[in-house]
Length: 274
Image (cartoon, rainbow, N blue to C red; front, top):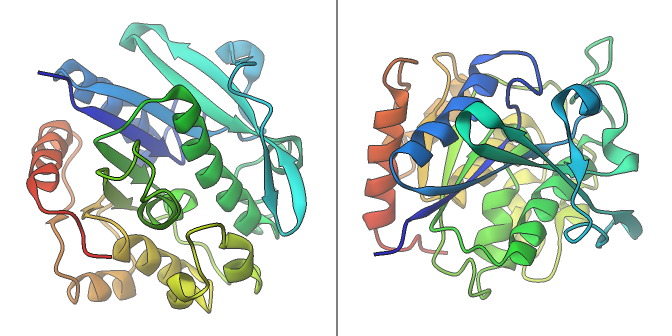
């Protein structure tokens, strides 16, 4: 019997970024799931404040080289990898000189969101899935964590739905207390459109703020996890209107077992209606 394959798409993973509840889950959840006998792959953005030398990142030439077109501009996709030896786990990093060379994650030193965060999130989501295609590694389940990953469910369920690697893939999305203020670019819907995705699919983000981005991810996912104790009230209200498997917040001592059981229940359900 083949091992179930779980793809983790994380906004933050320690030790590459400072310890937060999200980055700790990003680090220890894949290890825990791997130790339960599942095969895993893990991706995160190669934010510019990640020390490549200390963490021994190196480029994977065979996976790099593709150009992704966003808003009529070409952006080279660079894939790097590092190993967490104690966990026998590799982490793949999505990199690009235009989007990930600045020395911060999603905000500058004054806590202002970067104006191109929309394009950065689009590039990251598409870059992950194109790289998984190159690896020819078909995930049974994809677990996305953090708002920066919120386009992954859309692209899996719409753009990649006919691809043999993804046509049976289930998606779980974790919601954290990582709310950003204001809106993404007013052209976000137009920029996010690719083959298989229409502006109608993105109607919920006509006003591209945090709440609507969460709604988009919720709508296209097969299961939802509350990754933080404090979650946006409007998002929680929306979740009550959606008939999908929901895992409430789990404390840090028990979450791996609870998440693993939740994966089992999501994998057992019928495909989400599109």
